[in-house]
Image (cartoon, rainbow, N blue to C red):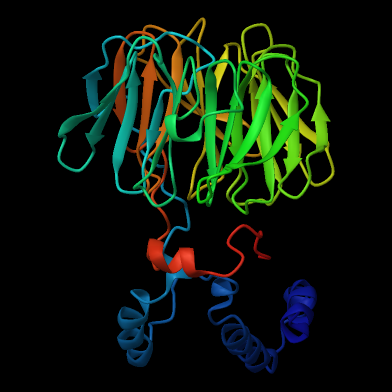
Amino acid sequence: MDFDYARYMLTGAAVKNESADPCSSKSSLYRKHLAEILNINRSRILAFKNKAPPSSKHTSNSSSSSSSSPIRHRKLTKQKRRIHKFPERILDAPDTIDDFYLDLLDWSSGDVIAIALKNDIYLWSASDGSTVELLSASDEIGPVTSVRWAADGRHLAVGFTNSHLRTLQGGHHLRVSSLDWNKDILTSAGMDGLIINNDVRVQSHIVSTYRGHNDEVCGLRWCPSGGQLASGGDDNLVHIWSLSSNQWIHRFEEHSAAVKALSWSPFHSGLLATGGGLGDERIRFWNTNTGACLNSVETGSQVCSLLWSSHERELLSAHGFSSNQLTLWRYPSMVKMVELEGHTSRVLSMVKSPDGYKVASIAGDETLRIWNGVFATPPKGKSAEERRREPFPNIPRIR
């Protein structure tokens, strides 16, 4: 890289062999002086150990910019969510009927839990913890087999063993095991296999009847838009019905046990989760627009109830024999996030609070358990009211 120095080093040996000459002393001094000049700091070539001192301008700016530079100084990792594994409250629920097919629990938009205990219905206020008895049925009508709050939180539908609602008599001849609301339409289903739509605003309340199940209908859920109804029965069948037609749209026969657990996704239009009872023990996911089965997951226990999170892609399942636990799954990977244990008998019903954070479960062990922090809180920046006002809340966003 330095031709002058290289040439000097190559010819240096020849210089030593030159004959002595009086005039050569000057030449030797010149070469020595030239060598010293060419060899200055040569050992420091490519030595970057000593850094150049930073400029005063850079030093003053670095302190101010460091706090505002998330790329350089902030580690972009998602904080792991802490999930409470123990119930916030445990309430006694004496005389709970340990029947897999019944729907004995619901949580209203007014933050009040309705619970059916044999012939009686009690209301428990989640805000102040107070309890009142709503009604007590006679043995000729009772016991109470299903309860369901209307969306307004002021009307409660009640199903009995020997008749339908006292104000909506006629239609069912055996017990009413499942109820659900679609605005002013109260849909009921029971042991006779019939599904009846009742318009509570008119005297002739029966507006349509669905026939397709061969045994007791124990699961009933309208989708968020109100356009489709899912029903599950003791005949191991799942039907998808349309509000505008009396004929089922889809008929799913893949479960090998009774289907009580039904839950519609709040994020994906037409996504339904169903759970099979003892002998099936699987959670299946369906696209009700096409009729396709999207996934099937073995749980190892009887699936009694399913709940989607309102804020995250997560699904909570409640189980019976043999673990009697609640399991939180991450969707769509269906990786187990946590298992909540405590019930000593199968979980009969499970509902979530109106804000979507808490979960209530009732089991055959005659206890009502309130679980706090099972589901994640919504992302900061928008209130719940603002999110409800968003157009097409059930349509997935393009990211």
